[in-house]
Image (cartoon, rainbow, N blue to C red; front, side):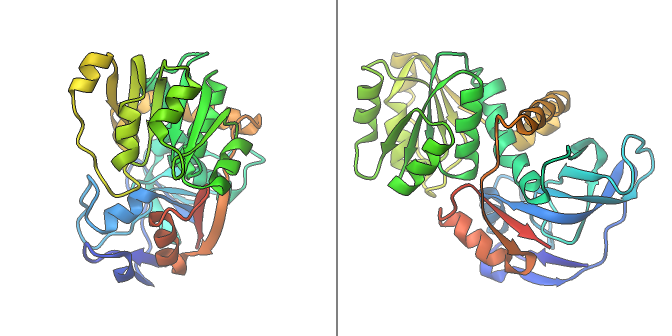
Length: 324
């Protein structure tokens, strides 16, 4: 089969598209013929050695796929060959086939296409976990989403609305704000030509926001850290700007709010039952039309470098997908 191979931690241009052996289903695993693979910001960090996880070489990046089961391993009884599935594989997704633990594979409901299904897992599931388990968003609270036109930002807008929050979208361009508005944002802030802290203070009448879903880092994080309401929760999702900020902890003390880390990959390992329940709820919402995946572009697997560069350059509105 063909796959994208990382032989060293280096810029994405060093990735190779090459022939590799087909995977085999070990005990508790299934092999999936990949029809679509979601591309995520952490994928670009991973191949450069900038992510929390440091796989052994060589490895195939890619954490979320949609496809068809072609092989069943020993002990797997709830899945069958030929079933269309979504899978969280952690590694191996940028390939024509991938082996994945059966516990992290679920059938795709009718009506969801392969590209949308592959793009649904990481972005929407991260937002869902962050807002549900970590922030415990309540109806009527205010939610500020930074980087709100990206894959996980749009997911947070949609899910925040489902949970009854008033959603403020913060983006760097008017085009991105238009996309955020189309996905349910109640209030729009362009932080390129507006002071984010002042704008948040104005739209909340000085109270601040209850929850921040913070994806950007750098100066945007610092503005958010000064825009929190009492008992607020500032969710640390990622650092798309490339700038990991240092946090003055006295702010949390005097303003009475919490800094809450959101690492969805670890959540799926530590709380598998909650992960399964979350995915069932997400898929139900999707079938009901209450959340949706915005796919910006679909590229062939061989163009993984181009896809990653677009994602890392914050040029994607919604999700990027690879098609083997």
